[in-house]
Length: 242
Image 1: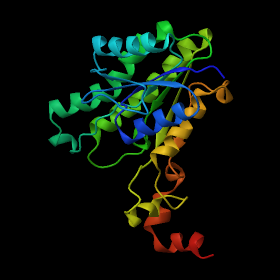
Image 2: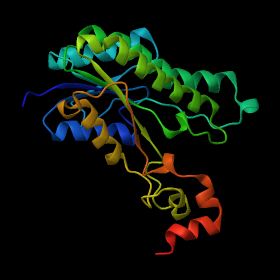
Image 3: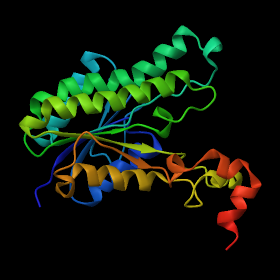
């Protein structure tokens, strides 16, 4: 197996670290970029840059290419989640949420695409909040929905040159000690960073060679569940009776 060059944006988050570990464990070389501190192992190369800017995105892409001599996979996992209702969301919160999430996805994709050849892949980490509304997340939800639109656009434009572009849409990740939270998940648990990492690795692999423009839910079934089934005790009892 030829080691691929992988760039993970948003690399210091639990999901970013798990994605890097997944690729490194299967023999690939991983560069990570974050805004606040240099990513450490399992990232082989760590970069601090603001990937919502052209300069920062270019720095990240060039660091990976210089270290590995190639760039095959780009993972777009950066995000900021301001929590406030619409009327209380400040201009700064809106810009932070949209720039860090959607702005970085666009800037890094634009910087990386000239170096991505046939068989390469971009995988974005979006969220169920791109399609399922929740209180207090206007900037985050809008940015994640924008990322999904960008994924489809990139898949259409760059499919002819052999670049596949997909996304994973996680539900809640890593809050397993809140038992009441699991009630809305048909699988009976929230997700882990490793769940997301496995899905990202699949979409970046040759096993998904005919998959592009797709958004893969990694949410334990949350996005298929009717809220009424969980809010109404009589309906909930129907499928918990056995």
